[in-house]
Image (tube, rainbow, N blue to C red):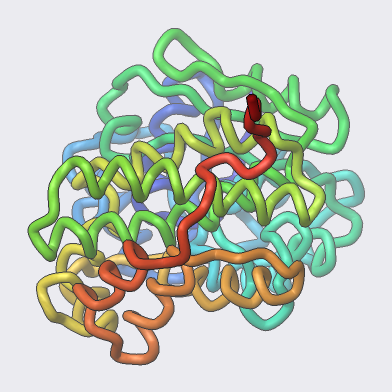
Length: 338
């Protein structure tokens, strides 16, 4: 049995707390918001962000970060990606040497183009940082539905420890040494999911969705490999797997926001209506900047950025994607010329 500090009381942090406590681990939750802490301590439920998932009475919550961090075998950093750096900065003061911190959010920092694990390592150099990512909706994890996910770390021992702590009969955990590739796939799929939602909002069908998913993973893998990720990662759970579930499900806040944008709302209006952090909006500019930095063409991501930030008409953006220059689907294949 492990002692675990869950840093963040949103839907994903709550779902993982449910999963970990169900495995017999002791979990304490930190939130910056006193009303969230009171809600969890009183009702043992995150009524606003994950209603219906009841936590055991052994789970407690606090706004005291030091108390939640002290003496823990593992810290799970589950705040939304825009708040990863500021939260990690606060954590550094109380973090012991070698402390295992598992990053479970998805995103890349716009100002630095750093992955979340890189941010944590920069802010807390004494920590041992791992990641947990895959095709996982909090709503389903909180109901005990079968789920697969990947634990990534720089060393096999750490990855296997995270695997052992989280894994059970409904939560299967694989391991990977490719933390970089895992995080690129996790961040950029949110941008493609916005595009899939926009297509849905425009009234397009399954053909368009299939095209966005397959051409989306092509963009993600081209960029990810250029950055140093492994090609196999992008065609596994944290690549194509995560992209499929995020583009296809109404649990996806990115897809839901995209639908509203396709129906004519601004991204600010869509985020307010979804009432959760839509990480694809934050990742879109970052993905575009990475494409420029590494010289990788990202047509879907580029058009999503133009819709979000330049006021481009969504139907026109789809038309421009369809009318791009003729290309081979897979560029490195050769013709057999007779």
